[in-house]
Length: 492
Image 1 (cartoon, rainbow, N blue to C red):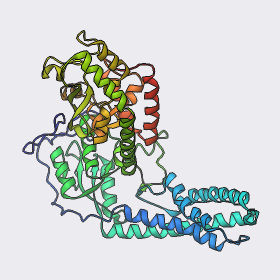
Image 2 (cartoon, helix red, strand yellow):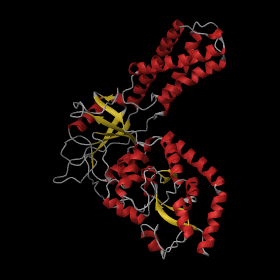
Image 3 (spheres, helix red, strand yellow):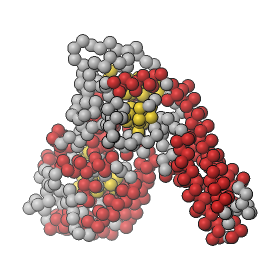
Image 4 (spheres, rainbow, N blue to C red):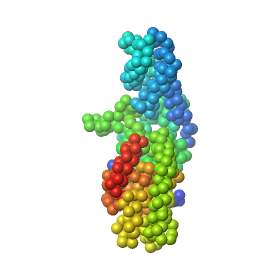
């Protein structure tokens, strides 16, 4: 990698950083701490797909059984039955009833299940009545249908949760505890004593060896990487919120590459704080827990993002082909012989370099100038054509090919050159964390006017906020605002 601060395999660089979270790690001082007995790698569990598939089947079966038992005046049409079977899993997915949980409970889910069943049957009743009065369902039948469907659904989900707990106890997954102090020890004891959670602690990531805990202490990035890979770690439990420092960002990227689920345990002083964040019903043996749902850990949404990128980029390349041909001709006429496409190395996802494409608006004197000259917007060597291309952002149209290839996304942090990535990473905390997501043609910082020679610290702040709150709909909104800004000639 060009810009990632990843040490060579023979070194043991301590994880160091600033911030309140205990992922700012340093090597132990004083006498060496006795290491716990080496643990054999845990067998990978069945994962989350099995329970989710079982829950989907339970949720689809419940309305079908309810419709079969409903004393309605007439049999429901097959299309309506199909809608019943498909609608409930869709509603449950929107309400997050398939998200991973450490302590799933059908009773805790019952109010949500009942509310969605009522909504489902109300919509269905109105649609049926409007289509054919023979299928009208009275309030009595409606209430009976909602109660019956809720009972079937909760009973089935309860059986799925019970089977999941038993399977988890038989085949636990490896987990790392990130933090130190009393709360970390409580988490370790709870996981060790309660096998139904399906988690086996195999290491602790902490800054100092004074906790006296039973787990091996991991103080370097290499040690963490070896443990995550060697023990097939699938979960990481944080006892404090992850901070914005570069080492924490590197740790989160490591977890993301191995598909680890991240959890934040809120206990001790946080649990007694009236202003602490609500965490819902989930808990770890009495300790409130919530998932850290970063953009990195949403594979379905990320797949949707990639599909949108591919479809939109392909369509845009086709539609913009005449404009791109005109731009290429204008560059050739204005700047003379030479390639009309300018290629430059940029840093993308996980700090990996790629070649970015743009229309040539200025020919650099040499490769060093190309790599280290910050802003050429007001360079006197730039022709009128080049200036126009930059003002209208037409010079960036070839980056649609980068999107189609997978080097970039339509929306994401703007990629920078390796020289400036290394420079900004030392000056601005959190700058490296921008590389958690693919680079983009446009982004949240750009639609707020942070283009060209503007604050790097503010850009990084907007980029990291985008990553932490990302959704496909947000990408659509950013693209719409970008299109509006282009009409005002707000290029870089």
